[in-house]
Length: 159
Image (tube, rainbow, N blue to C red):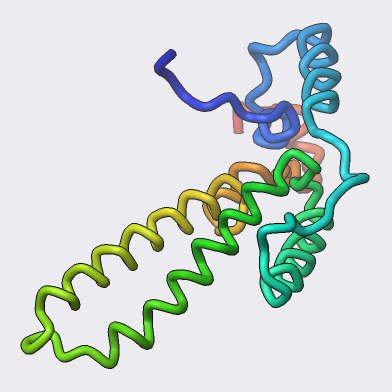
């Protein structure tokens, strides 16, 4: 179904644009979102990762759990991200050793592969909230904290 992505209730409330949501709908939606969040009791690196990759997994998983946006359900996505990123990093030195003029065919092929890995990393990073754009979609915007003056309280929006 086409349309905008559904935003978490906390984001909608934080933006102050929740006029279309009744209290009952908000409670129902909050309960559903909490249920969909997932547990964090079985977070461990997947067995297909290498030792260094498992260490990176632990570091990133810890950071994501601090943000409250990572659960048992995201383990493989983070594992795939780390694998794609590792392969992307390995291709860099190989490509730099090639002469783009003399080894044009191999250079082009490896650059294409590296670009595909980069796109794959970007997609996984977006899914996990590893880049600022995706995190801003997830993080609760703080409500306005400006204290209204007596005149603003009295005359509201007519000032």
